[in-house]
Structure formats: C-alpha cells, structure tokens
Length: 251
Length: 251
DNA sequence: ATCTCTGCGATTGTCTACAATCTACAGACG
DNA sequence: CGTCTGTAGATTGTAGACAATCGCAGAGAT
Image (cartoon, rainbow over all chains, first blue to last red; front, side, top):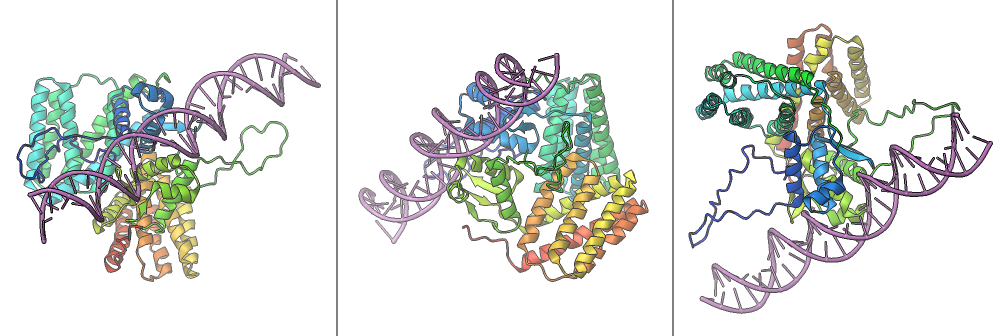
C-alpha cells in the first residue's frame, strides 16, 4: 500500500489485461493516488535527497498550507514516516526529521552488509544465468556512465545493482527490510559532501564480485561484497566527520 | 513514539531526576497515552495473539464504535500496522489482517536466524560477563518453568532470552528490525496449534549455545543457534501444514 | 439466456472545527 | 530577589460531517 514494493518504480504501465473488443489502448493509465500517498512520497523523497535536513521541523499546519490539503492525510503520512524511522514526533511539541549520529551510519552500513551478504548467498545458490547477466549488464552501463563522468547515472545504476541483488533472492521479507535500510543509506549519502572519487573505479569494483558469483564461490563473493560495502561505509563515515552535515537548523 | 522501543516494557518509572528539596517521590507517574497509541497497541496485540486471525476484516467505523472513539486515531493506528506489515488495505474497499503463507513463515524464520546470528557474534566479541550471566539466569528460570509445565511462562522467558540477545548487541537498527520479525514470529506461533512438546527440553536446548558463547566459540555458537531456530521453524511450518490455520473467515 | 448498464450500499478518503497539551514568559507574591 | 502561578501562543490530538470510490445486484437491452 505504501507504494514502494516495486523497487524499479513506475515501469508497470503494461495495461495488457483484457482490453475487450476495440483495440485502442495506450491511454496513459489514469492514476488515482491518495493525497496521503502523494504526501508520503513527496516528504520521503525530500528527506532522502537531503532537501529536508535532519532536525528540520515539520509542522502539520505548514505542510497543510504548502501542499494545499488538510491535515488528516498529512498526519497519516507522518505516522508512516515515523514508523519507517525517518522522522520523530514529540507529542504536542512537534515533528522533526530524525537526526543522525555517526553511530547510526555505522549501523546502517553494517546492516546493509548483513542483508546483502545473505542475498548474495541465496543468489549464488540459485545459479540463475539470467540473474547474473542482468547484473553484468547493469555494471557495464555503470562503467560507461562512469567514463562519461555522469555521477547521477552511476549512483542510480549502483542502486539498481544492489536492489536487483536483493530482489533476486526472492525473499520478500528481506526485500522489505532492505528497502528500509537502503532508504536510510540514501539519505546519508545525500547528506555528506562526497569527495570526488574515480567513478569508473567505483563501477569496476563490482566486477570481481560478479566473477566470484559466476564461479559459485560463496566465501569469496561474501568477502568481496563485505569489503565493498565496508569501504563505502568508511568513506561516508569519514566525510561525515569532516563536514558536520549532522546538524540541521530546525526550520 | 510507537511505544515499543524498550523491549522489556514499562520498567522505566525511575522519576529520579531533580526532585528538588522535599523528598517524597514514588507517585505512580501519570500516563497520557494518545488514543492512537492505545488503539495501536490493542489491535497489534489482538493480531499477535491470534485473536484477530488473518483475513479478518477491520472496518474503521466498527472499530470506532467498539472502542468508543472517532475514526481519525484509528486510521493512524492502521497506517502504522500497515507499515509494520500486519494488515493490508485496499483503497475504498477494506482493511484486513494480512494472510500468511507457508512461504511467509519460512521467510520469517530465516530472517530471524540471520538477525540473531549477527547479534550472537557481536555479543560474543564483546565478552561481557554480565550479559552471559543474565542470559544464563533467564534460561534457568525457563527450565524451572518448564518443570512446572507452565507453558506460558516458558514462552515469555524464551522471548526474553532472544530479545536480550539482540539488545546486548547494542545495535539499535538491528533491534528495530528484530522487533518487526519477532512480532511476526509471535503471530505465527499463536496461530498454530502446537503439539505438546517437552518444555524442559526446549529450555535445556539453550544451554549448549550459552556454553559456546562463554567459550568464545563463534562458529560453534552460530551453528547451534541456527540449528535451534531452524528446528523451531520446521516444527511450526509442519504444524502450519497440518491445521490450515492460514484461513480466516473474513469477519 | 447473456450481456451491459445503472443505481445502491458499504467503505475508505478528506475536510473543518474544536479540544488537550506543552513551552515560555510575564506578573504576583513572599 | 527568587519562586511560584497563571496566561498566551503554538502545536498536536480528536471528533464528526461530507465526498469519492468500489463491488455487486438487479433492471433492461440484445
């Protein structure tokens, strides 16, 4: 119901089902998305992109005016964001974007590592060539994007890669937890001012992992994956220390 | 905010802070719990104990009348339960307790295994004697309760044991995910008609794990833990197959 | 007999107004 | 001068009414 159970997003416009008689489809599929849902997506995205920084206070009445809707659906969206751990509410006092500590970042990356390790093992055991091919395609696109220095594309493809890994495990509970963690990781990455790093190198880092997976080498793949994630985490944690993106101004 | 961030529950009545001058504390700490919170706890507990079975429909208006409150707080509670994965809502149609498949059960137990394995490793590395002592005490109580054949107490202590394990890892994100999984596991256990098993044996099963932990034997402890959880999971899955507690009547 | 359409009832979605609670500050009181 | 008390403003909590939507049954057409 909360609209993020399909990782890849909005690609299911397939209206393939039962268009009876007259064959004139391809109308853009009318969507009736509740205000709650729109509010939820809007706020979540704002938090994840760092537009709404930790500490920023979210006042229902203000949001109500800004979005041009009543408070009821906004409140429900806030309850969801609260359950997801992105915001905090103090009764009768206010709601703020959850502040992040260095400890939080460590936890996010260690959890990411745990979940992905599990997924990789499942995927290797499944030995599905299509899966590995899909991953390889993604990495190749990533390398190309890295060569073009288009950092945004690289990031998206990197997310695609890791999302795909989890999806391929076929473990829906794992997927659900992954989404929570990946969300937080996204927020963290948006908050740190990343140093310029070699984009092609980031992309190429995925290749050894793929090789190990294709070779069915579970311990090797796990080793590489954990190193991959740990180095990413360390890099972020370092930058976190450097610029204290932790503090938001409260409004 | 959702009142379950302290596993052990309501033990923080410490009003220790700054009672200036006159020393007469020990008043029972007045609680102002929002209706949303009360609704949330009530419904969640009903689902987790199996009182509200999968498929049972939750109609906001009915709940409103039964609980004697308006729909607004009920809706917010339902959004939270939905995010937690306990219920499902179809827009303009209805809300029901989420149905469980055998696959769900497998996923719940495999995730439980993954999270606990991680926690055990952390706890062993920390080498905190107090931690191990606390676990041992719990197991001993469990054995006593098993001898008295008080199944309820054994269950509670078993939960305490595993909750404590997670808590001791000091990993709050892990704790939060654990709570979600443990919740679902609780629901599953409430739904199957468990065969009578030897309660003392269940309790004693924890002892080898403790020994391995005290010996700092990480691989051994992991092995034992995973076997412990897997056997519990298999037992439940078996019973699930036997009586199809999966189906609820819809109201 | 089968299909299509329309209206009805049930349920959720949204809005507005009002109540309860918290913090901070100003003023009364010793 | 310090302490308590009360009041104002801001914010969330709750209530009740109304709107939108969906599924289904039954009337009507083919």
